[in-house]
Structures are given as structure tokens and as C-alpha cells.
Amino acid sequence: MAGIYIHIPFCKQACYYCDFHFSTSLKNKQDMLTALRKELELRAPELEGESLKTIYFGGGTPSLLSVSELASLFEVIYKNYRVVAAPEITMEANPDDLSSEKITQLSKTKINRLSIGIQSFFDDDLQFMNRAHTASEAKKSLTTALTYFDNITIDLIYGLPQMSSKKWLRNLQIAFDFQVPHISSYALTVEKKTALHAFIQKGKVPSVSESKSLEHFNLLVASCESQGLVQYEISNFGKPDYFSKHNTSYWKGEKYLGIGPSAHSFNTIERAWNISNNANYIRAIQKNELPLTIEKLTINDRFNEYVMTGLRTVWGVSLPEVIKNYGAKYATHLKRNAQKFTAKNLLEFNDKSSCFVLTKKGKFLADGIASDLFII
Ligand code: SF4
Image 1 (spheres, rainbow, N blue to C red):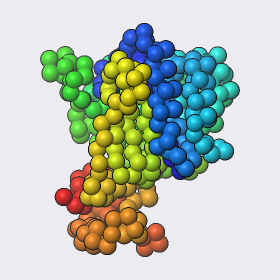
Image 2 (cartoon, rainbow, N blue to C red; image 1 turned 90 degrees about the horizontal axis):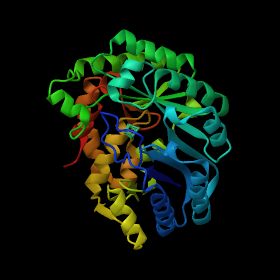
Image 3 (cartoon, protein in one colour; image 1 turned 30 degrees about the vertical axis):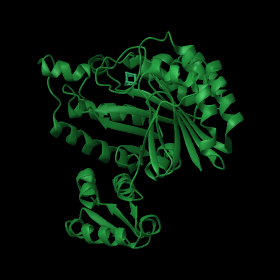
Image 4 (spheres, helix red, strand yellow; image 1 turned 60 degrees about the vertical axis):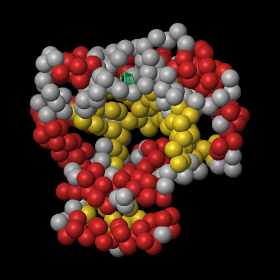
């Protein structure tokens, strides 16, 4: 089983904190769509013999595509790939694109999961981040989306300098009142080469506080738990039947193909990524060339990645999987190095599943614990 990620590299405006690959000029949109369709055709042999169980439109802003543009991509996918009978097909969408008409149209396409970039239900937060939508558009789009789609996830950002814990809790409560079955929530991070980074450097806005983010994260975990939303990955919370199949396959080390500029692919042995430049991407694909950089992963790289991603999930790191995929030496290393964390009650071994899983306390230190378990 495998997945496909399609990167739609256009946005209406640049959010101040964003370092993803996108362009605010849509003038290449048609050439880009032609290139995406062609890359899908060119790379179909990479998934020969596999069935696609998930398709994910990310970005950028995939909701800038019209329904007929989406249909043209589906046509190529279904012609060139074997797709399972009931695939999970997600599209990221921004509230300002989700008019009632657009939602109705989308509900008639193959898309069966919407990931809505709400980020906050408050206008001052949205303005601070330079989001293109308003709080009222966020609520309106969500109300309509929930009447047409059962499987919906929303993104929320915490840790904004002006965001009090009370306001963060209010944000969460609004999401719970909508009864969304899935929330992805991340701390605001300041990436270099973003407007937010420049504003902080110039003293125009206060810097982001780690202790505030941690406080908000604690509130997020406790609130979601009280609502029956399972923290199945550090930043992802869902009702049991609504865990993201696409993202779960990333965390479980399954194969996926990344189509479009900047998109990453993984075939269990190599990672590859497309050039992060729209014009150069289009030019290369027009010449039947794949603008890919390929990195061959060593067995240590693969083990370390599995530990890193596995520990962030509710399933943890499976000892039998480690033995099967990497060998007994890696299992011995894992067991030996895990001891100091199990002794401190940060990590526990589940006898039933034979997996190492982080405890509640350990989840706050996930990345540090994982890197201590790496083989260098
Ligand atoms: S809409 Fe998404 S991809 Fe586009 S700039 Fe904002 S955060 Fe980045």
C-alpha cells in the first residue's frame, strides 16, 4: 500500500510565519497543472504493483484549484495508478476559499476529507499571522463543511505572543463546540527567512515564548483528552475512526510519492525531493526530466527515522519490527538505551504489543528521548 502527496504551490498571500514552498503569483497555474499531470504519469512506474490507499492535496493552498482542475488530476491518477476501493482523499483548504458553493461542489468530487486551515477563531490572531481569512469566515466555512463532509480536520496554532491561556482555551472550546472529529495543532515557530523572524529581529513584535507554548500544549493535551480526542501523534488528536491514514503511513514508514515542486517522496530505502522553484520545476517536467534530489538512506538513518517518528505516535516503536527490518543488533541497542528512560518513567514497554511507548511525561521530551536512542 502506498500514498500520493500532491503539492499545490500557490497561496493568495504569505502568512508571516510560513516557510513552505508557494508563490503568490498564480500566473503559472495552468502550466503547473500540466506539469503535475505529467509528473504523475512519468512517475507511475515507481508505484507499480502497489495500491494507493491515500491521496493528499497539500500546499500551498489546494483550495485555490477549481473542481474541474482537481478532476483533471484525478483522471490522471485513476488512469495511471491502482487505487483501493475506498481511499482516503484529503484536501487542505483555507476558509476564505470555502464558500457554500465551493463546499457543495467539493462534496461531489472524490475528496472525502477536508483539512481546514482555521489556525484561530479570533481576528486579532489571524491578522497577526497575516492569514487571508477572518474569524467569521472560519466559523461559517466550518459550519457548512461539517454538513457536507463527515471527515474533517482543522489546524490550530498556539503560542502566539499575544495569546493568553484563557484565549487558547476559548479557541479549543469553539472547535469542540463544532464537534470536529480531528484537530492538528502546532506551536507557532519562528523560521528563518520568514516575515515573522524579521519582525522579531527588528523588535516590531514580541518574540515567541517557549514556556507559553509548553503551557498551551499542556492545555491542548488535557482538553482534547477530556473531549475523547485521542492524541495518536504528538500534534494530532482524533476520534478513533478519524485518525489521518495518510499521515499515519508517513509515521509508519510506508511508501509515498510526492508530486509537485518541493514535494518529498519515500520508497523505504531512499528519500527524494523535487526542486522548490515553480518555473524550474515546470521547465524540467516539460523536458521529461524529474527535478529530484535523491538521498540514499543508510540502515542507521532508517532505524533513527523509525525511532523518531514511532515515538511520537501512540503505537510507539515495535521491537519485533526493529528485529525484522534492521536486525537483532538494533533491538539490543534500543533495549539498552531505553533503560534510563523507563527508569525515569518517561518511556514504558508494552508487553502486549512489544512496543516502547512514551509516557505522558515523556511526550514533552519526545525529540530529545528519540535522539538519545539513535544509532550514530
Ligand atoms: S496559506 Fe498555508 S502554505 Fe500558504 S502561506 Fe499560509 S501557511 Fe503557508
